[in-house]
Length: 340
Ligand code: NDP
Image (cartoon, rainbow, N blue to C red):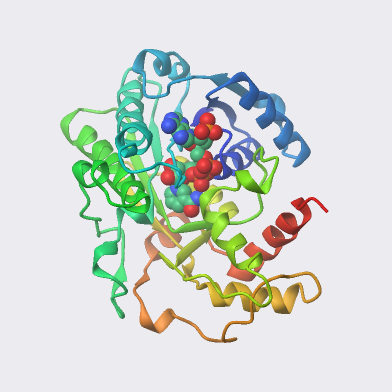
């Protein structure tokens, strides 16, 4: 079948494209410029991604424009929607334009465009743990989040946020609610599946030419890797995570599992903390690493909320690798990208 992937040049999307192609699907992926299309194909080629002949890259400059997006949905059987701004560059005053509109209108337009073509049977939307947890409640020791939980942020909270992480979280939860509202209010012929991953770490196969372009979640790992042996361990925020290849596999299963209901899945391997990242580096890259010592062995796990992602594992039949297996290849890649 032909699957539309939006935001095809992104960190997670590149892995989604790779697993789709590997499992015999054809992929049409959107990017916002010809340069990004070229860079994406080249990066996937360099990463050894199979069946690239079955990948079509299309330029949609403004994926929040229904008229521009709709024609690229034609002929597809499924959609995986990943395009959304996940960076912390925007300043107060810019949150609506740079975060809320791309996320919320982008999701609305995907739901509408998919409804225009009866060939579309499933729409998978990459939401986030940001749409699940209530950051305002702090660490909440003992609390266990599941896909039943919803972050309370509103559109106005995003527009008027005091800091960009709040605006980002609002953009994700309002976007996801927009999709659920759409399928509640329309007789859609497709099944909606939303995925709510924690922080996504792992080796990168998307186009990235320097560490300054590092995606937001891998920046957390790099923050530890690059803090210096005499430095301080950066604070752990939103301490739940998933490996990027495991998330891509979960996304594939979300497209293909035999279900007729709409479904929401929390997708996390478990908790992590930045001290654990440092401890793994000292053990696995003893010569090379630049992570601080901190307090080896100390773990935050007992002092903050956790997640139950068993629904995804049970219904989709996926298994999630541990932190070490995810971040050691990433660390090798990141240290290798430094200019000597
Ligand atoms: P990346 O930053 O690597 O990729 C983001 C993608 O979205 C790029 O293709 C980018 O295109 C596109 N995009 C960014 N801004 C806009 C915009 N204003 N309009 C249209 N497209 C835009 O991020 P990830 O791969 O990490 O994230 C992919 C998805 O997964 C996002 O929806 C994100 O919210 C979600 N997610 C990510 C998590 C993580 O830890 N990484 C955790 C939970 C959810 P361009 O290069 O042209 O800007």
